[in-house]
Image (cartoon, rainbow, N blue to C red; front, side, top):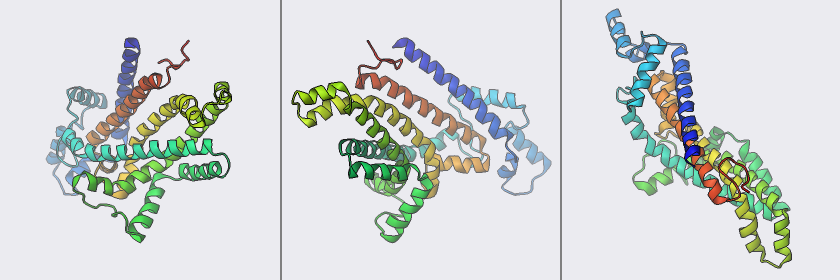
Length: 317
C-alpha cells in the first residue's frame, strides 16, 4: 500500500508538472498582448506599458517566467488576476463553493439515475431494456449546452417551474433549487454512459455460473441479485463512475456559462478570453489535480468493494 501510494503521488506530481508547463507555454504563445487588456482600451504612454510589462514579468524569457511562477505556486501563491486585480487564491476561494455544489449535485444525479437505469435494463429484458437503450443513446449523444438550452426553454420559460439563468439564491435549499437545471444538464450525458456500463456489468454477472447455481438452489431472486449480481458488478461500475464524476469538472465551464453560474468553470472561460494567465493556469492545475485524486480514491476503494481485485488491477489469488 505504501509503495502504491508513493508511486501514485509521484505520478500526480509528474502530471501536474507537465500540465503546468504545457498550459503556461500555450497561454503565453497565444496571439494577442495581455497589456492591451490591462489597459482596457485606454491610451497609454510607453512608460506605462513598460511598467505594466515589468509588473507582470512579461518581458522575461518564457523559461524565467515559468520558473518564477512555479516557485510561487509551490509556496501557495498563484499570483494576481489581471482581470479582477485580486489574488487568484481569494478569487478561486469565492468561486469554488458554487462549482463544488454543482458538481456534487450532478454527481448524485449521475450515480443515482445511471445505476438505477442500468439495473432496470439488465433485469427487465424486453420493452424496458429497449427503452433504456434508446434513452441512454439520446442522452449520451446530447452535448451539455444543448441540454441546457432545452431545459431552460421547457422548465424555465414555458412551464416556469425553475428560475432562469442568473437568478440569486439565499440558503442551501434555494441554491439547490437554482442549481437543479444546471445539474441536470451537466449530468445527462454522463448518466446515460453510466447506465450502459451498469447494464453491461449486470448482464455479464447474470450469465455467470455461480448465479445459475444460486438460482438452482432455490435462492430468492432478490437475494441473488443483491449478493451475487449487483455486488460483483460494483467494481467496474465504481471505476467508470469515478472517471465520469472527475470528468464533470471539465464540463462545468459549458454549463456554468450557459446558466450564468458564478463558478470556476465560467471564470475559466472569461479568463481565457481575457488572457488572464494566472487564473487559467491555476484553474487548469486544480482541475488536473482533482481528476487524478478522484481516480486515485476510486482505485483505493475498488478493492474494498470487490475483494477479488487488487490495487494493481489483477485478480487476487
